[in-house]
Amino acid sequence: MREVSWSCVNVASSPVPCTLLGREAFILLSGHEIVGVDSGSGEVLWKIPWKTTWDQNAADVIVDGDRLFSSTGHGVGCAQFDLSVNPPGVIWQSKSMRNYLN
Image (cartoon, rainbow, N blue to C red; front, side):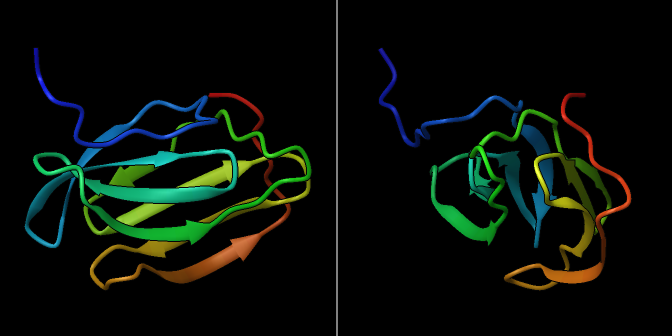
């Protein structure tokens, strides 16, 4: 049996595999933050606060190269982040688009 290297509660989105600063990783949206995790070690690389009124984030993030896009409802909206820096920086943010599910 494999040892659990990382776990998270209150997650309705799917982990999205990617490369973060040369490391195999995945990014997921939990109930109150976006989390980047090293796939091999389970080390949390960074967290971005992403709190909604109901602590519910069910939409998957989208990763394209060094860009991350997230969009959720419940008063938050959407944002694009730069993954070439740690922690990721906000490129732009808007409340015009609010996805509740994928």
